[in-house]
Amino acid sequence: MWLHGKITAALAAIALAGSTALALAALTGNAEPDTAGLVYLKSPFGLYGPGTLDQVPAGAAREMIAALGMDSLTEYQDYSLGLAKEIGVSWVRIDFNFDGWNFAAPADYLAKLHRAGLEVVACIRPVNNIAPADLAGFQNGLRRLVRRYPWITVWQIGNEPNTSWRDPDQYPRFFLAGEQAVRQECPRCRVALAGVAARYPSQSDNSEALKIYDRILGEIVKQAPDDRRPFDIFDMHFYGYYGCAGDIVASINGFHELLARHGLDRGTDFWVTETATPTGQPSWPAASPDQTEEQQAAELIKRFTVMLSAGVSHVSWARPYENYRYENDAGSFYDYAGLVDNGLGRERVAGIKAGTKKKAFYAYRTLVAKTKGATRIQRLGWGQYRFAFADGRTPLYLLWSETGSDLPAGLSGPVTVTDITGKQTQTEAEAVILGPMPIFVQSCPSA
Image (tube, rainbow, N blue to C red; front, side):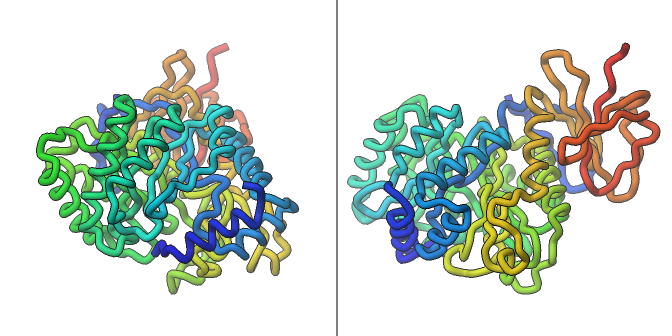
């Protein structure tokens, strides 16, 4: 839960640390492929919260920064920006916290993100996770924020009402107030509904999330009957362990069906601004599996590829750098789901240095680099995906198999195989053996 005291602590940490078009391929699990269904891509890859410390206590924030040999939040932000640029993402989600009177906005850092060419998705979050009593004041503050950052064109109203709001049934009035403010101030901007906690580490299914969002969507339609498209983007969050990619596709389809029942599916863009899986064995949830770096790296590539093939247009890993004592809960799932080690807690005991990049960091960088410029993705079968390029490049295949399946029919003769670290080898297609770790395969150009 996201409590006011934790936000206050996080803001104190900041002060102490430093000076400041898309076609849906209706696929589920391991179902037969829809080989005719192409999904069109455009700069899909992002990161959630790079350079932010909103949800860690003040002392933990100081330790995180000090472990990197830094003295200020500004240095940490610059370091995080460097990680985002190295991976090659095109967008980031940054949270803007509203305390009932004002918005907290890291102005200098936002300017750096903008200059670096990164699109910023602004998520508006009330610190107590309740609709402010003074909605007019909230709207006026949001209008000022939108005017202040004219280059931010995606505004998300709230976050995870199905898990973090005290009363999720209060969310619709907050959303509609925010949507109205954004639309009035910036007609060209896009509005995103609060991300749904679709799959959490402690969840067995998403049935409760569907029930709550059914009520939320129904109330939004009821309160704004003339608003044909109250939101442009529907955001889903998926946390869980290695091997859940198939469940994610089923969940995506479930939310598509939910929106369709309320008449809100047509023309709505589907995003995933938060997803992650940890390394090691977290202390929470109980009985969490002990996952390797290889499993985290493989899961990152599999999830993103499966999501994109299922019609999700933007995908984002939840934080490049590991949290520490996330929401003051040491060693939880969220402390180990980052792509870079923080060198604290069990890592300090093991002698792992802060800033050590995990295999998943390199896997994400490789995925972004190999698919750069791809305009379409097509699922050929489970674990078999084909990326096409408008510039005439040879199609790229992203492949894995739990059972040793054969290569797609379109691959034969000399091929280049790239592993998740970016290492390339040339061989004959007939010699390629598929396994659980994804690989990129591309036919060699004719001599």
